Image (cartoon, rainbow, N blue to C red):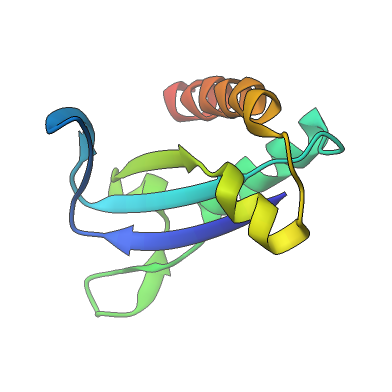
Length: 112
């Protein structure tokens, strides 16, 4: 599993010049999952990401998480990213499956 995080003021995904998804302040996550990755790997990753203290507090110190700031998260499944990093091919359908699992788990964590 590979992850690239980027703090954003806003981001959006357009498909054929139509807005598909957008968020305000938060995290843009490029996610590469391979078939060997387990549910435990996904749980570990989600818990790690949502607890990262990478946003500024009132003293301008990086001391707050995306949850503490109540910011948004956008996850982009990236088969190309995994193919480049690990030279993995044919992972697109599998990644979509794991992307849905990750999205559901992240939604569960954020709602509870």
